[in-house]
Image (cartoon, rainbow, N blue to C red; front, side, top):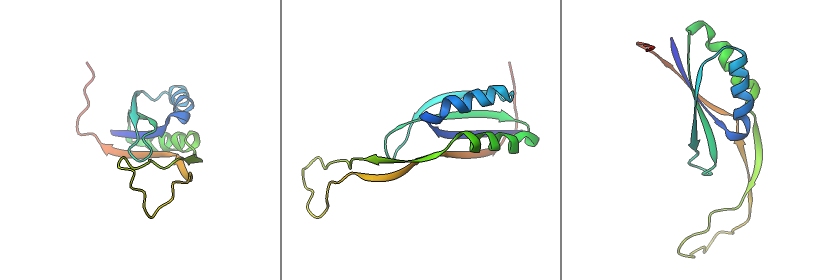
Length: 109
């Protein structure tokens, strides 16, 4: 048995959740916040049999897309911006970060 932890962008979470339900995967959905852009993410905890992991990864890959987003740099609190400009920057966001972990024991009460 495996535990799959998938961190996805909020924009992709509803479609992914629907596809997980349709494919009979049981998931716990948690709200989370990214560290780099401090943007909203969703973390899915999904327990599944080893033989279904590839199907699960295919669903995540299919429904979680990276996209470009323009962000404004965070200004310095001490107003010391010597040497660098404060222009908006385009960065790639989204997609999914996925961890596949072995499960030693599983109990359902």
